[in-house]
Image 1 (cartoon, rainbow, N blue to C red):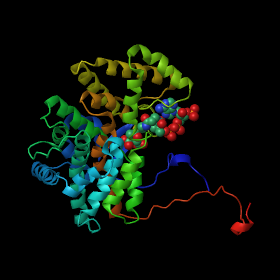
Image 2 (cartoon, rainbow, N blue to C red):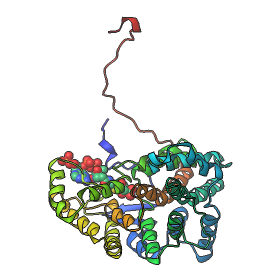
Image 3 (tube, helix red, strand yellow):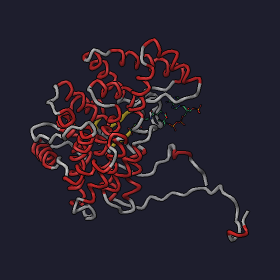
Image 4 (tube, rainbow, N blue to C red):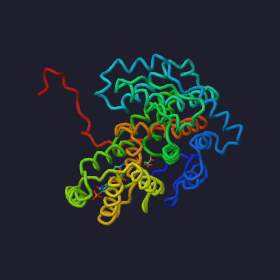
Amino acid sequence: MTVTRGLEGVVATTSSISSIIDDTLTYVGYNIDDLADNASFEEVIYLLWHGRLPLAPELDELKKQLAENMALPKEVLEHFELYPIDKIHPMGALRTAVSLLGLHDEESDVMDEEANYRKAIRLQAKMPAIVTAFARIRKGLEPVAPRTDLSFAANFLYMLSGKEPEPIAIEAFNKALVLHADHELNASTFTARVCVATLSDVYSGVTAAIGALKGPLHGGANEAVMKMLTEIGTLENVEPAIRQKLENKEKIMGFGHRVYRQGDPRAKHLREMSAKLTELTGEPHWYQMSTQIEKIVTGEKKLPPNVDFYSASVYHSLGIDHDLFTPIFAVSRVSGWLAHILEQYSNNRLIRPRAEYTGPGMQKYVSIELRG
Ligand SMILES: CC(=O)SCCNC(=O)CCNC(=O)[C@H](O)C(C)(C)COP(=O)(O)OP(=O)(O)OC[C@H]1O[C@@H](n2cnc3c(N)ncnc32)[C@H](O)[C@@H]1OP(=O)(O)O
Ligand SMILES: O=C([O-])CC(=O)C(=O)O
């Protein structure tokens, strides 16, 4: 047996959803730069789920279905009262709420193609309501009901703050959702595919994926970036703090990537947004500190920033609590998870690799009184 640590470079499936070839990311053949500059998140959802861009009536229909399915069942809203909401991480709450949603979906275990598509719509639509309701309830505020006249991006910001968002905030948030939607066989998407390849249900696949995204080596890195920026605090502190971290062999959050070598094509869009938004909020130091960190880390370690690095200062500038950054990643990435789940069902085979055993050789069972 040859063991490839972390499955690096192992091709585990075929997929027609997204590809990373020579550091270029495409969704169904469309370059991410093109989509980031032009597409609405709803169009991207359609693209990932149907393998083509929608015609106008198809997009209208998807928007209508999403809008109709955004509100949460009362059982899910009420469950936030069951735990000390101000002490838990919102990714834990999201993971539990999605699992609970499955219990209140009569079609949860219906395994035909159409039922699975309907569940995909319901889950995609309800993720923003879960994250924003959690964020408000823990501050003693009432959840805000979604509005059918707002886009997906605008609705998220509206449900979070209770105020109609500015056009620039909607544009930035839509772009962030487009950039995070899918990414080939990343850890959380692989998790979702492994789960549903046992012919388990859609809710189980997404619940498992949320668990995988939560970790700081994956989606949890965006929150960790903001923590690092906050701890460093000022532009003057950047140089000594980062050099110290590198000397201590600490990982600098938001840098490096398993697949990209020259750089993550999504980072430049987020860098640009970070420059614009931090200027507008009167906090340009977050952007200046970030570019300074990038200069040192790329210079010293040849490691370029990934999608999580500049998204931190972008979300901060939109007034979003730092521990909601990873749940927002999930609000976008669930579109990719669902596309992969539907693709997995359509051509399923159990995913079950092998492990090379490195434990002790054959041993004889000794009864407990004779051990020691
Ligand atoms: C959406 C996303 O999931 S994007 C990734 C988000 N995660 C992060 O930003 C966390 C920081 N980055 C990392 O931990 C890694 O770069 C990962 C997890 C993204 C990729 O990891 P891998 O491909 O497994 O690379 P691995 O962790 O083995 O690193 C290889 C070498 O580069 C170094 N390295 C990798 N990333 C970093 C980093 N961010 N800072 C400092 N050194 C790093 C490692 O220390 C290691 O050095 P060594 O060979 O001297 O021991
Ligand atoms: O692909 C990966 O390994 C991680 C990543 O960038 C993503 O999930 O967007």
